[in-house]
Amino acid sequence: MLRDCGKVLVRDEGNVKALYRSARACLAIDKLEEADDAIMRAMKLDASNSTFQNLKLEIATRKGIIATRNQQTMQSAAKKREAERNLQSALKVFYRRRIIDLGS
Image (tube, rainbow, N blue to C red; front, top):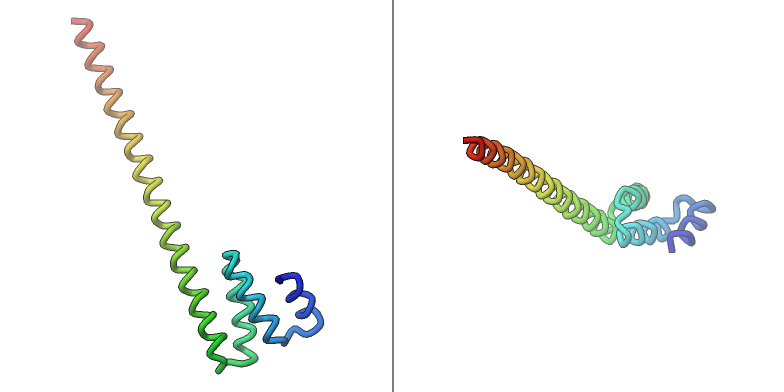
C-alpha cells in the first residue's frame, strides 16, 4: 500500500486520500515519524477532517506507548547491570575473606 500511495503522491502531492492511507500504513508498521508527517500534510490541506484528527491522536498515542516501553526496557537493563555489579562486588569480598580465612 505504501508503494501505491507513494506513486500517487509523486503525481499529486496534495492527494489527501493517499496521504491518509500512507499515514495509516506507516502507523501499522510503527513508522511513526513518517505517519506523523503524512497526516500533518493531509491536515494542512483539510484541517477540519475529524478522521485525520483521530489518526493524529492514534499516532501520538502509539508514540507514547513506544516511549514508555523503551523507558521500561532501559530501566530494566539498568537494574540488571546494577545487580550484576553488586554480585561482582559481593563475590570479590567473599573471595578476599575466604583467602584470608584460608591463610590463617
